[in-house]
Length: 284
Image 1 (tube, rainbow, N blue to C red):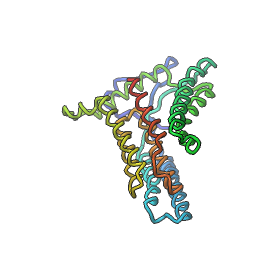
Image 2 (image 1 turned 60 degrees about the horizontal axis):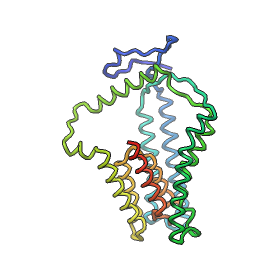
Image 3 (image 1 turned 90 degrees about the vertical axis):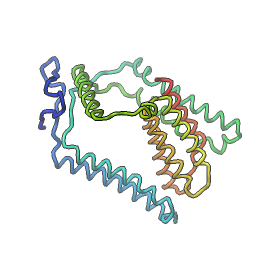
Image 4 (image 1 turned 120 degrees about the vertical axis):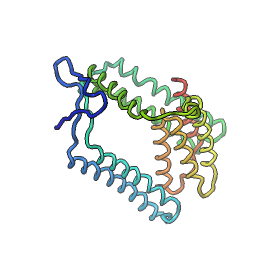
């Protein structure tokens, strides 16, 4: 392993060490061979998934339709990830330690996700029952299984690796330095500050999700793409929960391309995404 100076403003004036004298943070140079390997793995993974989609579409006789473009999504993600991995010549490392969780701690970490998932299932199935659609569409509630799986995973996790106290201080410092570097030279306008208000961003995200549902239930030729675009833009507005939205949007698009027919965004999915945004807003 090769270590070098940070090269970041203010890094030379701050040295973080653990009580045992070891470095709490250091910069590791990534060998070129490792970067090439990371590039190949990421790009080939995206190409493999894209090829699987196209082969399935060819077998279903829809390769020449809009579904073909869905295969470009994993290919683009793989290519973008591969380029980032190759361009990353160095990475900052932090010292870590392992903490063990008691059964009580594991339950406290998991129960909120279990309760949230169960509440979403009850909400979606209740709406379907009231509309007489439960028997035919009960499985549309599958996104609500995500928080249940997360809660189960947290309960089964008996411990985790965490930063040492001095490494946590180092990370806070370097994150602040990086944030200052990104903001250097920026002069936000009044409109920029307005659109950064969380209430404005989340309201826009909800409106975009309503539009996504409207496009998703339409049978037009490009309605699936319009719904995907609305969910993607909603993810940009509600970036605090954008991982959920991105997973749902990309996963839905890939499923649409794989099965060549799932183009509509079910009402249950729209309800779940909206609930995630509302829950995140209430935490602010």
